[in-house]
Every structure is written in structure tokens, then in C-alpha cells.
Length: 234
Image (cartoon, one colour):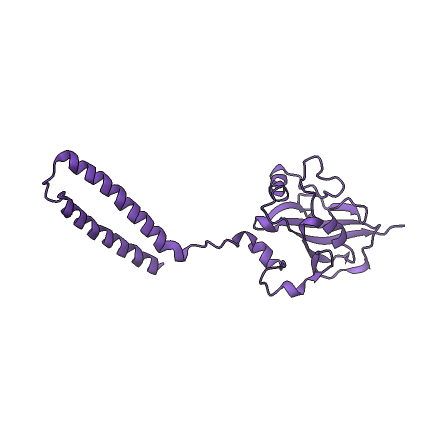
């Protein structure tokens, strides 16, 4: 900050010195020119000085601004996505379909299998939107999620991601776009087969659509899951 203030002071002093030279050379300082000509010079000089100051301030502040083009994927980096230089990447298990997961807390009892019905608390974030929350089903104001595993209701990454989990277990899923929501996705699809969970609130739905319906955005999802209940298939 001190460096930035020093630089700004130098720019200001330099600008004032330049002003004196320009005024002297144009005759403005001594009032030797005609009034109309003087006004034209004053207007032109004022614009030039404004541009010098503005550009100088911006240049001086550049070292102190965060203009990192990868800032939008900061949450993705912290989540250990492929292609990121993150020391935690190796901690995730990666499946052949691209799904990655990390068991944060092991559960106990029988593991989830295809055909089981599970009730889970879960949150979902958009890696390509700086980790914006787009659904929350944690039991504190939002009902937990319930679905039958392997039936195609949940998005593929969540459906596959709960396999092997046990009651009380917590897992973070890194879900690639082709295991997430349909692209494009519509309001009528949300909550239906392959597009569950429905974010619910309009603002959350719009955040999701801003990613999955926009080819320019990273569509990876970061989903945290805690298994509350497992109902084994008969």
C-alpha cells in the first residue's frame, strides 16, 4: 500500500510539472493569447491531464489488483479437480468415468448398493461459478434427499457417488459435466429422472442454468453427501 501511495504521489507531481510546462509554452500562464484560443487550450489540456492521471493511477495499482483469470475456479482448485496444481488432488479416488471422491468421514454398518433407498443430507456447488451454492438439502430448513440408487432418478454422479457409503459417512464428490445435469436443462426436467435434485429456489435454479446451459462455463459439480438412512432392497 505504501508503495502504491508513493507511486501515486510521483505521478501527481509529474503531472503538475507537465502542467506548468504546457501552460508556459501555450502562453496561458502569462495571458498573452486571445481568450477564445486560451479556452480551447484549457479544455484540451484538461482532457489530456485527466487521461494522464487516470492511466497513471491504474498503472500504479496494477501490482495490487487480483486480475487472475483463473479466479473463477478457485473452489475447483481447493476441491482437487484435474488440471489444477493442488496438493490434495492425490487424496481423491478417481473412477474410470471421471467421477472423483474423497471420504471425509467413514460410516458404519452395511454399505449402499444398487437398489437401496437412501436418505442423505447434501449440498451442491458450482465449480465453474466460484463455488456458488446451488442446492442445499441438509435438514435445517431443507428436506434431505431421498432416492433409490441405480434407478436413474439422481444425476449419474450422485447415483454412482453414494455406492459403498455407510450410515453416518460423509463424502465429497467431484462430478464431471457428463455425469451431472442434462445439457441443456429446462425447468420441467428438474426433479425428474437424471435431473435430481431440483435446486428448488428460483435463484438456485438460475445459477445452475447459468452453468449447464452455457458452454463457456466449467460445468463440474462439487457435491457433499452425508448418509442418514439406508433402506436395503428386499
